[in-house]
Length: 102
Image (cartoon, rainbow, N blue to C red):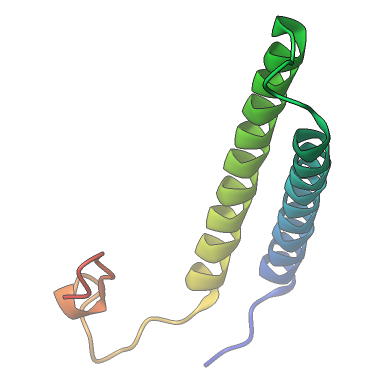
């Protein structure tokens, strides 16, 4: 196995940093939302409070999507940095992850 070059290491480090920021933002949004949700009497909450919660949940969903996208980019960089086995075809179906595990 050969070591990744400086450009690959820099790209990987950048994506790990982006991933960390995305996950931290998502975690912060979740923590604030949980605390706020627990503090509101939703049975008597007015439409403004409900709308605010809906917007906050939408913001969390967007942050989670960014975190997943950052992870996917990181995962691709790590996978691309790995050398392909010389004795296997790149499209060997046994190397492909599937939800069923087959």
